[in-house]
Image (cartoon, rainbow, N blue to C red; front, side):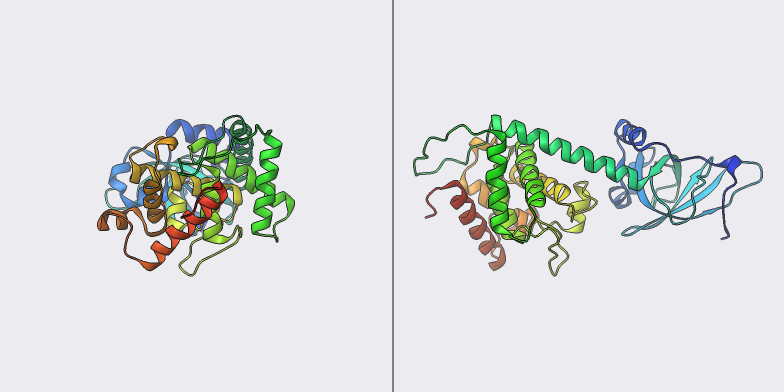
Length: 327
């Protein structure tokens, strides 16, 4: 296969990141990893592919377009047909929306470009939105904080705190857990924990307990099995949650909170927070550590030493953060 550059007469320039994001939402684009798992199920649907433009191929003199090659870090290269090829030089990082054709019965071999944008601009836009959402939700969390599950010990009456006071308390606690964090990093993590916890109906103290047990709030932590970041998300889990950079604290906290919520729903049947029991939390923590399949297989907390120690450790930390009896 000969790789060539497209002529300007046949070129299709990348659109703006905001316009691209609008189209992605409107079309309900799936991730490449999800589509590759079952190509036939996505025929006629839209998939997002983000990666490096490796080359352009098969351009005809009639102006019918050609094929662009996008290489991804985890899922290999994809061939995408286009009526008009982009003018970008090989090596440019692009985000592409493609339609899956009828030829994709066993693999994604029939793809057609709908539009594309510069991946770096899209990532900046997504990060800006994530931070704004976290800040907005943190403000809302202060007005309606989520309580801890009922405990035997009576809880003292809590005083009303301002948003700044709540954020400051979490920031100071997080810096106490990891003194290598800067004030700015601790503040970002605190706002993310508070914001996303409120959004998904999870106690922020439980999120802190999970992160403390997983990574001690080390942003760049990586386990021997490849788990990444604060909440130690596995690559496949991160991808399924829409987290494309697990070492970005905002994205990681977002993914970790969503995963905690997902495990709570699976183990407790989508109860509201106030309906959860300590048993529900234990099963959800076991699922977070060992996977929901292992919990279902064993009909409860799996008989794995690591998982049992993990559930005990996180529960103990959480109860301590809630100020309840740990017996």
